[in-house]
Length: 215
Figure (tube, helix red, strand yellow):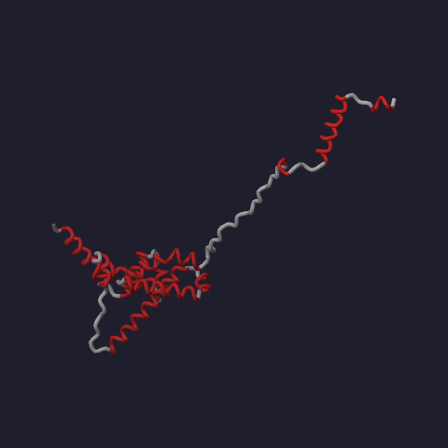
């Protein structure tokens, strides 16, 4: 029996050898050409872009710069002076940012800084003028390059106090009470100055309208 079992037919021997090769292939290593390596992509989480906080100086600067610059131009009547005062005001605001940030009216605090800087500059100019026998005013290149509109010409005729009250309330959108805190006067005085400013501006504006109506 043992010899009969060992004596396999050629077909059976071939099948046995094939099974042996398949078993060796399953348990052994495959040639490199038949190995497929799958690499899973590594997902790195994207960091969100950092944005300045809502109460940061950067946001405050972006929101208020243009408004303050326009207001100071109406107050000073000179673009170069307006830019200088505006930039100096923001430097002062940055230096005392914690105080400005805690203020109930940040914009009002900023306007007060700008007006104080401009008034200080006017006092320095006045002192220098008194020491000069024949002061020669510097030409304004902006006025020479671009004609002022009727409102600008009308505001040039106003005293500084009336012009400041009018700009803060009529243009900057403040209340008389808010403007009074910035200007250091009562709210009633702010209203009186605005009324007088309008009355002083009316003839200039009416004359400009008549000139524009002429052919």
